[in-house]
Length: 448
Image (cartoon, rainbow, N blue to C red):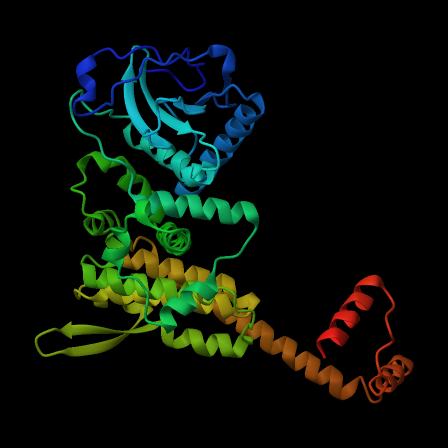
């Protein structure tokens, strides 16, 4: 195994031809030209291509992509398995060879992740390079500590996780906002995908539009999971537990994210609430502070079923967590409340957002069973919330006093401006004479 930062000295030859039977595809006889390679800054990525500009662009992009994935997962860069990227034109005898593949293989020099990308004319977009690279990064993370036994099978990272990380990476690179309108449309038309159907989607057969929708949903799922308390650690455990996975993606989520409720029904509710929250991320209408406080107050109380047989329930304050946490459905109620607090956060008064962030963290911790120093945390949050309300009341009182006692008459400083603006309301806008305006006017005359 090569330590981090060591310059990989080539892929070598397979040590056992039998490795390709179950675990490892047999390597072809194609030899790499070391004069046509570039090594990334961290030395994890080794790129082969006769085009030096392409090689340099890929090693730079690979390091950026890896950093994005590591930040999403809350990890440092401690790689152990190199990732070899082979970019080449197809040979005349390779008409049926797939455009790309990502494999975990063993060589004389140790384990490596091999990315084969065939640059077929006019088909590079079909390769979906960000997804390939994300899959390779996750594969290295999954098996760096415990490579698979020779002759055994290994699991690929979940497709939804690959798509979600790659989608979010591209969104951040472009500076775009989450596609809230898409999720509103899915909710309004009743076409919101069921969580199990979504997790089992086969992206290989999707058209570009379906891929875009799936990528947005996957990106939202990654954000929702990573945003919860302990969510990043849960994602890392899930990736490192690929070897023990039974192939059921729903079971995977429930195993590594206890706050999701423990069963598929609760997971479905959490998924629906999460996408509903995402659908409001482009709202720019902030609530006033009193409105935010009025919306927050009922979210700090919850109805918990106390007797499932008699179907009875009771109302509890958040501070009563020692009492209501003993009831079976308390975690699901708390998970639902976390989603509602996230939805309110988007529209809350700016001064109140730190309060909402803290309460959302508290609710997520309680859903995960974390109660250490919870009394002090709740007390601090309540004190800060009270302080903000009191300070805003004092500011309002001062402004009202100042307006009533210190401004007996208007200063007249803006009288000329106000008169000019009022006069312009009744005048037509000035005639523009630039080339664009003249062209538009000509078109308008032709179509009248």
